[in-house]
Image 1 (tube, rainbow, N blue to C red):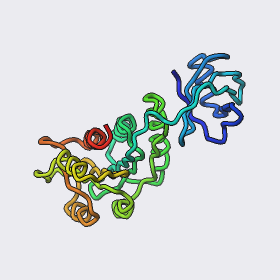
Image 2 (tube, one colour):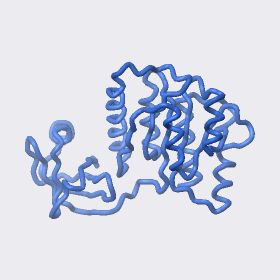
Image 3 (spheres, one colour):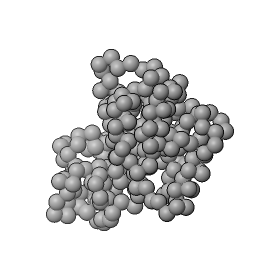
Amino acid sequence: MSRFFVRPEDISGGKIYITDRGDIHHMKKVLRLAYGDEVDISDGAVWEYRARIEEIGENQAVLTIVDKQKFAREPHIRITLFQGIPKAGKMEGIIQKSVELGVDKIVPVFMERTVVVDKGNFCKKLERWQKISDEAVKQCKRGMIPQIENSCRFEEALTMLKDYDLILFPYENEENTTIKDCLRGITGSGESPETVAIIIGPEGGFSDREAVMLDGAGSRRVTLGKTILRTETAGPAAIAMTMYELEL
């Protein structure tokens, strides 16, 4: 069943109005949908719908609501991935897998060992990354589209961390506390964090200065296992482990 996203204001009187030309083209030319076909619709906020196509024009599709329910595939905990910006096309894979695993949003972070440089056109990368998030959501049929936030410097990311119930700091130099021990210690003590920040370094890892600053920000150092994971593996792995312990 195909899934499309609309704004809450596009839903009125038992009808859903799709005006995005890209979606209309996809419905007509790619999926070959027509009158009477049913699709899944999300308002990106609270509700998801089953709707039947009544008409598809050049600029608008009109659908009748058949069923309505609250999101069934959205996790209760909200995980934000603060990702040290990697080189080449690695960020695209990180976004795709993280969205499938249930991340709430992703913040690209310039760190001391980041190789990538912002030459003034970084906004184009952000647009591309957001599109990848949009496409991944449709594939896995989540109810909300995780946002790819504007890139920031490490010091800016530190100020954001204060808004989270739990900050996980997977660190290659940590040998004692596994992420499993950390998370099970939290659930065993009766804590129930609703917002979780996971911060991952770029290819070269964290500098000593950054590690000290993260300690000062209240993060919890953890290891993800006996092997050293690549940056494109570490984020999705940490998200999956966190979801298993705190959500599933």
